[in-house]
Image (cartoon, rainbow, N blue to C red; front, side, top):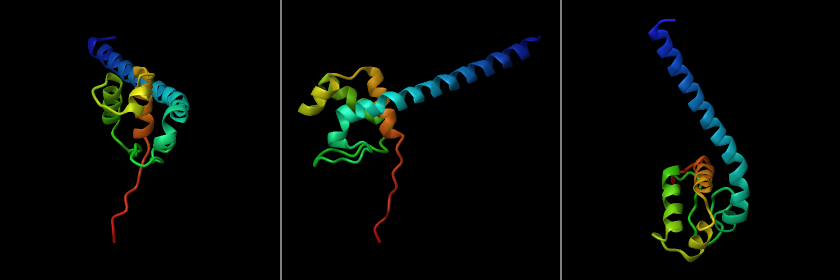
Length: 114
């Protein structure tokens, strides 16, 4: 096996394993996130990310990075909201990633006014 073939095979293996890792993370989110959403989020933000509480933002369709940043800011105390500060103190980094993946993976549709 020559060097070029080895490099190609190594690259393909890296791509395969990165893809497999991403699929495992998605599967993990699909198992972890619904339980966290039910216990921590749904009362205000809804299971589907459509807010049920006046003043609570809709989360479905938000960018993953934005959701992660906001949850981390609440947890650190850099962003203030009494309820969110209490809730986010319980979240691990993995929880934050799972919740952000959950809500950001939801698709919303927009209807322009007529």
